[in-house]
Length: 73
Image (cartoon, rainbow, N blue to C red; front, side, top):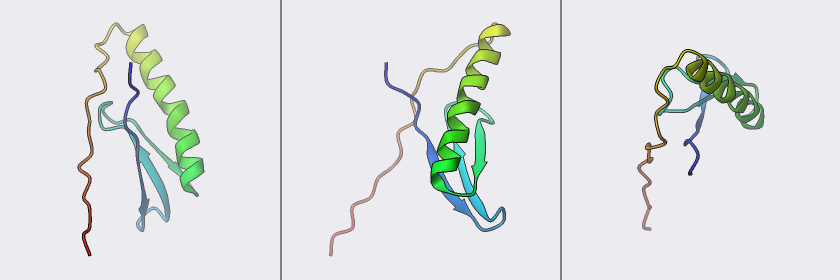
């Protein structure tokens, strides 16, 4: 099974990095560095999945595919 896509981006407003998983509603984390945001979202994802399982809520399959652009010079 493929894993969930993780977005990591810098937020000027938060003055740090935000990581989110588009397939899991409200699953996001903050870090001072991209690496920290990735560590945090990994823990948040595990907690999100455990809570959904415990509450017998449906767990979406990974489906998100980012749009990638190629710049041609």
